Structures are given as C-alpha cells and as structure tokens.
Length: 82
Image (cartoon, rainbow, N blue to C red; front, side, top):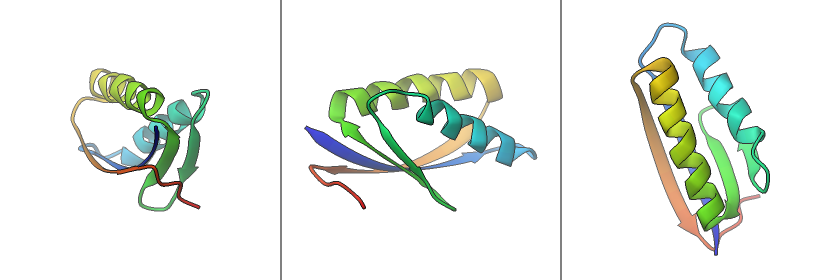
C-alpha cells in the first residue's frame, strides 16, 4: 500500500536549521523512498511499511541525537503527491 506523508520538524533549539537539514539528509539516504523537501515541510512517498519504519527510526535518532523536537505529520493512503 502506498502512503504519502507530509512531515514538519520543529526542534526546540536555537540551531534548528542544522537539525532539520540533518533529518532530511537521513531521509534522503533511505532507499525506496521519494523525499521532496519544501520550505515548511517534507513529503515522503513510498510503501507503507517502508515509510513507517524510516519515520520510526529517524524520530528515535533525532530525539537521541538532538533532544526535544516537535513533529507534525499528515498521512494520506494511496495518494501520490506531485
């Protein structure tokens, strides 16, 4: 099943840009995902389990590496954003 996820990261830190860019770079390094960064959010498209696994691992990495961040997500099944 295909899923499109729109995710925004809001690190609770002064150097938020570096943290957001690091998160996006890690997403882009994952195979079998289409990652489209935007100015306020990033769109991830792929098979449901692959996307969910990547998000789970990267949220854990982010919290361990950088501490607190707020993540806002929207999940749309069987939809492929342009």
